[in-house]
Length: 173
Image 1 (cartoon, rainbow, N blue to C red):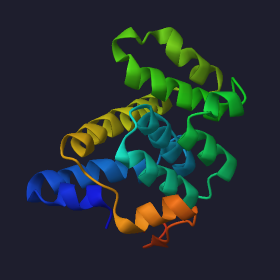
Image 2 (cartoon, rainbow, N blue to C red):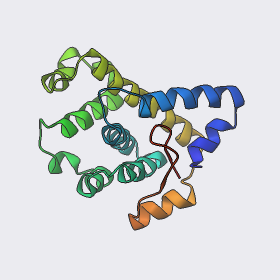
Image 3 (tube, helix red, strand yellow):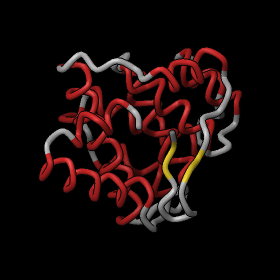
Image 4 (cartoon, rainbow, N blue to C red):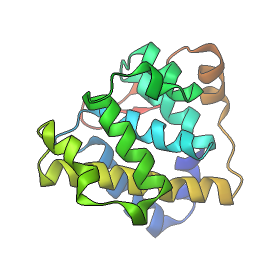
């Protein structure tokens, strides 16, 4: 079990409630596919240079994320590597702004996603992903959470972690 999962499960009621919320945000039905959700998490976590960024880069790899995109997310060059205006670029751009300067967000910041077909529900999904990972980074950074050995090895070797569980309840170890 990844380090964050162990940390959250240390408190029986908060851990259980949070795991339910996290599962719904990251795996529940919606407008975003799992790859996009992991890409948003990776992009905004790297903004904070968080331990969790490597975890979600590896989760993105497990979800068959494009290795070139993963590399640019990890090294911070995604703006140069992605095509401005495409869906991935706009998701990362919004995640960065909402994380770095949330009080300066305006309706105009959401317009590029709306132009790509995002409705209110899809925009809310993006906001929930950004919000939950900003919360998680503060927990991880504030408590000095370190990468678990399997994720660290996957990050160093670029060998994908393995999925376990069924299609709906799959988790990565």
